[in-house]
Image (cartoon, rainbow, N blue to C red; front, side):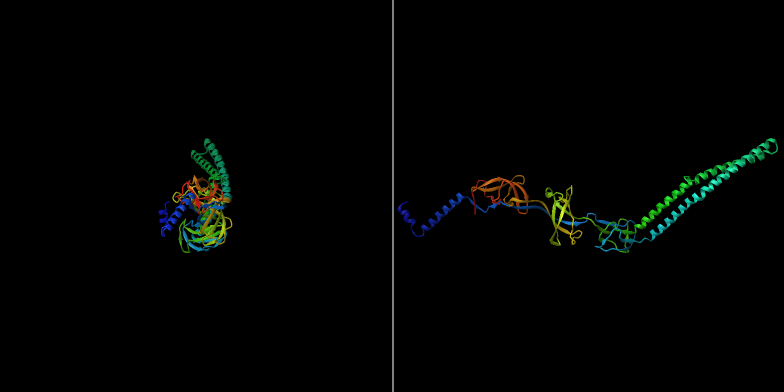
Length: 404
């Protein structure tokens, strides 16, 4: 550098800017050699729990709607909503006066039919046998009389007209004898009259059973122990067959019904444990277990129905209550964990941009469980490895990088 130039640089107001420019150039060169400054994400060793979170409803698996079987008017309702009832408890009554009269009439018809059978057995059959014996005796006498008259006519003692009278008497006796045989056979056990009488008894019994069934339909009883959920009619209401009167939640295992997005289907399995909390008591948790996974997917909602069994439901749990369900689908201790922000690529071929020897290097990884913000690295990274966040798109593979 020449003396005049040095002299000019030493002038006041010139030397300081030159020195600053030189310093900036030096820093720029140093930073270029050291690489871009980043805040790396560090893989750590820890525990991870993967879960599927959804909202569901409490439901008894066998809710029953008790409906009317006959047309009638509600006479009385004996239970209130929320009331626990035992099996066989009378819940409601319909007006049964007509049904009671029908039962009395059917019983009278049955008694009459049974009396007819008894009459045939005690009187009809013996009388028919006696009538047969009498007819047989009359036939024997008529035959003997015909033989005598025929002989006397042959000798000329009787006229032919007397023989015709004896022949008619014999024909009548034979006819009466055959009729008595038929009547005796009909009145005997197994005969047509006896079978008709027995059929009348069976018909009367069937009519009584129908009348008693209609009478029983006027009394609505609990088919099993449970809790009355809804009271749908009041005394004085008219009802038709099939009209629901009461809704009963039978005793049994409590279920939670939840719709899970089909994308989480691979994470679900039977007997998985879940933590549940009612929206009304979010600070209280109770366990449940996956008991059913629907084999079909709802095409409209893209969801799968899942049912969870609650073995010991808390006393505050109510029918149709909304609950939050956290189903544990996997858990690992001492795993290598990376914030999700450090993962790149597709789900099939994930990779990370790892800082090694001051440069960004592409590193394929194998992932495992995930939670809200972390992913398990099964292979490809170790605890302590620094990873460039995926949001820093300006840094590419092979670039120099340095931590802040």
